[in-house]
Image (cartoon, rainbow, N blue to C red):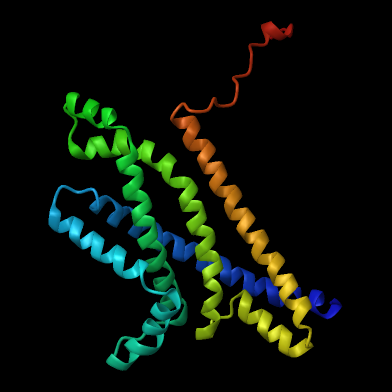
Length: 233
């Protein structure tokens, strides 16, 4: 165990790569989720059909298969991707498909009376979405988005199969050099858990902020005047 703990710089470098994959993949997934989620509630049947094709295809495709396709298959027809780019693309496309359904469901879950009020106020469609529907929908999206973020982070463990030096690959290297399988995987188990908890805390913070903005939770109490505390100015 001491050999494993003394090699913590190697594992920290791997953990940093895992965090980078999570951040980049989440950014791509978030953009795709909002684009195709909003397409899913569009009036145009053609747009809704395009959004459904994306969701059903990438939601039904394994991340590992996508990653192998981008990294091993596409170069055969002249399209070459760096390992990091291929991994982020596979993770983002897969999780973005799940996120698109979250966005679509959250927008449709906003009470119909809210939409009718925006029509009565003669708001343009973009104003309805930006000022009324999305702020309420985002609060509904955050808990499932948090789950997807953690799933993306855990799913990034497969990128070691295309030679990306993430936490899993570093653990395999350390296991081979020390021969301590149990200790190595125990340590990275804890490291993955810690990363997941940090992500969860971030999402919960955003949930609280969203609730405060929507008036669902009181904000920090205002500081009382100095006079009420018996303190002279």
